[in-house]
Length: 106
Length: 480
Image (tube, rainbow over all chains, first blue to last red):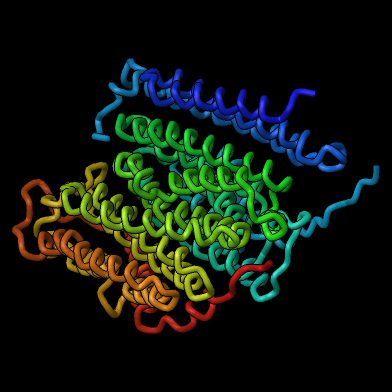
């Protein structure tokens, strides 16, 4: 069996890639993709912890799995709203670059 | 393998259920409501909020938990539920004429407000990190849309996009923190986390998790250095939405913040109290100093709300019963006062034009003596002048801090209140001492907005002069 730290490292790397994408990219859709990566890193963490922390009775307590399902659902809902907002911005401003969406100072 | 049926005690979540049901009814009624009568949907929403408040009062004093300890109805949660319902009701009153003036008179507005209220109530009463996260999203998603609700206005769209990107970004941190806490303890239930910590106090995974959770909460309640989205979002969003989210999100997020740290992590209190004290100092100081520099009323109120988050954080650092009750009282006082302040901005606007710059407020006292007087009182209450609600709230928080040995934090808080008096007094001086600005004539104030202002004013003065009943109610505490 692959040891737990391998999964955690993978998740941490994925989270950092997503974090970098969310901070460094200027395209609103790319930022959204970075955030999705961060959420998927959390899912890996949740499932790995669920499998390893209580290995005696993984079928009795499904909290980790259920939580990951909730996160997937919420990521979908979030993406729907985010893309709707980005389309609305694109229609009014003809850009999805967050640096050009700057009517108000940061 | 045996399956146990969880205790489905629907009575405990009755307030949230009633609001959710109202939202669904309003959503259906919107289909058959002709355009000129959309405001009746808002009235329908108000009735739902009143019934939910009745249900909340009915649950008072008999703490109970439901759904296998995922949600509780303890006096802490119920008090916050009442604060949230009050804030939502007042902001719907403010919105009824506002949405018409801004030509966004759609039933969906009230539906989104009501769904956000469901999320807020659940967040204030949840005792499981999964439910806290779901409730956080349930309150955030409608607010992203509400911030961008005025689609014809590029600033409103921009506010919605910024709020969405930073909100989604912060929920990822929040979730990552929950995942580590789950890994460290094998549970997401706050009480069970505390039990696991009691057995095994050295828990590195949980420490990482708590840190990430703190970042998530800090984004949501706008603590420095995670505050930079606040001024833009509060400035760009339609004013009625700003009024709602400045009070509702704070009440709900601080509710979950207090519960998570005081119920699940008291074993680490020595560590996080120092971190939170530092955050409180930063938040108060930067919030107030930045507010000094603003010429836009909505941005000023945004920085002021950041500073107030700092004051409330002092109550969390103080811990204990007095810290808890002072935070609850402060949130109630802040809700009434802030809604009043934003309400005055709405009342003095002319159609879609709003007096956003402080210099536009010149001579407003001559044109609108009553609204100006009420706005002045709300500003004084935010600054903490006696005998208003804001003063009592600050007094309770600072005395809770002194009681528990954090006198230096209270001193910094008092100094900050002194600084804040300057920018709170500036619009008052402008209103009373300057000549009316050309282009701003006296127009009729919408009666419902005036009603909301008067209700908030009664609350602010009553809480200042006779705070005892509210303080007694606020001392309920958690169900453990």
